Length: 458
Image: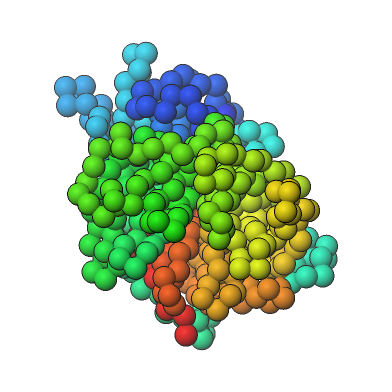
């Protein structure tokens, strides 16, 4: 039981503690933050470092009731509570600590999750909520009678009565690569995109951009991005675009030749466009216009090949206060519609792009309990929509007439572990495992952790 509680403010994107765009370099910047632990509050000085919230290790250890061992000479720290233990070190690529204003700072999210806590974000009150294992999470809004397209959203569909037949008839999922074999939790990868040779993804904490051989699964770090990267897309020339959200919001561009060659310095990563607040999902249309979702902002952006940015309000609002993302995954169909996933309500919507560049009001395609936590969205070779239902550890197919079915699903032992993004190459679907401890993936300690999974359509 935590005795004292901390109150901190932050910005969450894709379900993560993503913070304002001040201080993107690896230098702690003091910030006014809020955090609730088991519903109680305490003020503590917070800092941001590369999208992540940091606070004094002493304050966090006190909240946890954990023993702390700080070794100044080696710049290393361990927290231990019973049999659970986590280590932090200066310059570490996994659990980095920093020193600022006479304080030793550690990442709040990693510290709490290491001891079985779950972390969520309430956009309405701008508060981060930390809950002890077994504590009741806020329930989803029940809107099962609101719409006549698809099925109603009935909230968290985690089923406590799983039997040997629960996952029968679904497609098998395998692991292409485990990016951090020495960890089954603690690495965050969200975006994924593939071509005929490679799969690309990025570690949100270390900012490492990975190139993964599509045949062998061998992975190598190509570069370190200037900022955290999430959604990804490839244009017709093979150039890679990477979203980096926050209040400012950037889209990075990596040239096709760099993707094929040796590892390179991050200074070669170009800023394609800025001012894309909350930038997350990316998708190109046939004319080369890049469409971007703005997450909790509700915005859809269009960026021309020349880098001209247009912003459109989707008109969508959150149904679950603890999950504010209303435009997440995105795809552009051959029919000209822009399709988006609503993580908050478990919906798929589509938008018409008019000849004058304006966007019409959203048209509901499907709303279903199977889409709880709808995250990454893509269009398959069969013309159907495929969605990563992250909080159900499921991949869901949605036909354009609104029929919703699971094609893959499992419990918290994997191989799907909070799936976030999807990318097709032919009939092969590549999936990024984000591995947050939420919904069917809570706790996230079993299984393989952050990885790239794949399945073959029948």
